[in-house]
Amino acid sequence: MARLRPLFHYALVSNRRAFALKRSAMARGFEYGLAFVIAYAFCKQLWSVMTGPGSARLAVAKPLVFILGALWVLLPLSSSPAFSAQQLAGYPLSRRQQGVYRLLSHWLDWKAAALLIASLACVIALAWTPRGLLHMALAMGLMLVGGICGTALAIAATQLQTCNGEAAKGRRALKMRSNPLFRKELTYYARTLDPYAALLIAMVAGYTELAAQWMTPIKATIPLLLISVTLLMAVLNPFALDAQTERDRYRSLPLSFARILANKHAALAVIFLVSESPLVAALLWQLPWLDGFAVLAELAVILVSYLLTGLVLMRTPSAGNIRIRMGSFSGQGITLELYTQAIAMNALFPLAVLFLARGRLPLLHVAIPLAMFVALSALYLWLLRRQNWFPTE
Image (cartoon, rainbow, N blue to C red; front, side):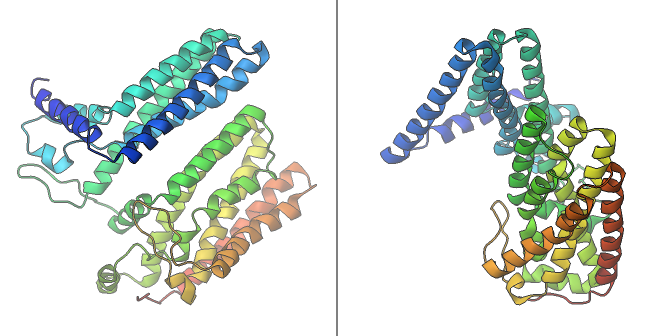
């Protein structure tokens, strides 16, 4: 650990300097005021947990624990190590020491200390709820799992960002041995903010299902569709993240346009499924096994409808004007008419399944979506094979 101490010291000094940057009095006043409001609301909620009616204490504490658990996932993603992977490779460190630094460097931040204090206060406040020890253990487990998942995602994102970079001398680069085009597209789309907004909606919807158990396979179609709507921009113009030079490079690849587009759609499908996963997991946990199969069949219909919407509308002139930038939300350049058409087409087939399955036997709630999925998949593959159009700016 002696070799890591100078690196951690530099990281702490860098964080201190970043926190002490000179800002205007108005900016400082706004930040301090916002921090005071958040701290006051948090303390008020904790006081309600400790002094409220016995039956209502847990209802007040659950949203608080869920929010803190989500923050434990987001905190490592919002922090960045003081040294990149290429810079770290130049230091005389073993693989284990590099791993320890990457793991701990995401938590050398004042935000981590503030979140730790808030989490400990929340866990202690749960002692005043019925069966307090059990709820304290569950809350600590949730926050621990959130921190592990957030750290793993942050490390994976760092690896994805540097996988195409040059290796330092004496080190072996992280190479993409299979499906390099698919992984490149997955990296690109994962750097926009749309998937994270969809994931947040799915987490909130999943929490409401776990707390209230109010969804059926038919009712679940609406939140599943809402999540898919937030991801429509990328599928309407899957080349929006590529510069013209990259589009020209596609022409020189020994691949057909249909194959290139299939890689982009495969990456979007993975992001779609990951974004929907919190809600789907909550539904599978709460519903009977037959209803769970119905939810999976409906999800498959929504996915194929989502890809089919992009395949049909991507050639429209207004779709070519959509611009997507890494690190921001998409939607620049889209028209209201195109967005309305995309939402209507994306929702048409899932709502048709909802209408056909309503009032039927539980087995038909699985059979009807599966039949629709097979039909839409055949139509999608037929249209995909006939794509031979390269977009230009």
